[in-house]
Amino acid sequence: MPISTPATAAQAPFDLWALLRSNIRTIKPYSSARSEFSGTAEVFLDANENPFGSPTNALGTNGALKAANAYNRYPDPLQKQVKARLAAVKGVEADQLFLGNGSDEVIDLLIRAFCEPSHDSILITPPTYGMYEVSADIQNAHVIRVPLLLDGERYALDVEQVMAAVMPHTKLMFLCSPNNPTGTIFPTTTLHEIIHRFRGVVVVDEAYIDFAPEHTLIHDVQRFPNLVVMQTLSKAWGLAGLRLGILVASPEIVRVLNSIKPPYNINTLTQQHVLRALEHTDWKERVLRITRQERERLARELPTIQCVQHVFPSDANFLLVRVTAPRELYTALAQAGIIVRDRSTAPLCEGCLRITVGTPDENTKLLEIMRSFA
Ligand SMILES: Cc1ncc(COP(=O)(O)O)c(C=O)c1O
Image (cartoon, rainbow, N blue to C red; front, top):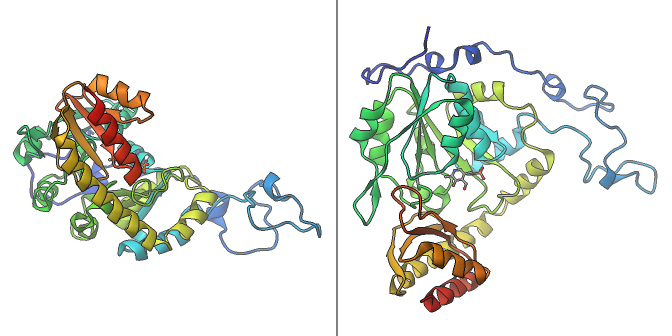
């Protein structure tokens, strides 16, 4: 029998069990060596690891193995230490956290958990982050697109259009706030209304929320069982290379994702380094302050440049900028060693480049090159 969430049954209770793919409801997760035994012991002969250490930690001078930089053991599959620390930093419970190899893995797992190939759909609101659609395509889930409203000056979500587009088998809705590539933060009341009316899962992607922390929905997860919030350490925390995506959801949804994730999806180096990095909230706050100042400087100065037609308001660490000759400007910047993102052919982004806020010196250089562009 097909799994469905009737769009009309607005007040029906959220039923996670019914929304899940039928095979996922009863899936038997892989039982890894480290999930079967996670205590301390002298000798581990349970996981076919290498007892001699790793190449970077060969035998020490006294013949003993050095513990530091040894990666011969599998990591904690449930990342308990990292989650305990992140729970404290984020003000949520550890059992509300799921960690992915970047948010991209979280997106992929959500779609695999809920969307029956060729049958179920996700809803997105373009222009938005491209991986929702790619992951849906891989799963062969349908993609319903409800474009944002654009009045020429700013983008907005149209709740009625979004809700009207929901189909009986729409399982997930991805709403990115602040939105990539527009920088738009959607009003909390708008998001709440959609979460309230949609009987599937609303995934609010807050990859850029550290730049506008007062707008987070992370604490609403307790109130809305169909709300899932994604964050990442790739942006404000400066750890894109480590790959750590964070999902905050009900413990029930977290359990489902744990049952289908690769057993050791967060590697040891990442777990160790994140624990150290999270101590440096002062660093993050300083970087956020500078980034916001620089974003405002760019937003002030870019419109004074001849080729710039419009700078969209942004609550993220980038600006979407409409220019007269996007491709030519892109090339001129690249020749000067500055790479920006050309979004000019994306629907509703015609003529636009997406420019990440750089360091003060990088931004000065960007402005110089753009001023000299005829
Ligand atoms: C909106 C949004 N979500 C998710 C991601 C992916 O984040 P991660 O590096 O955690 O995979 C990005 C990356 O640019 C993004 O812009």
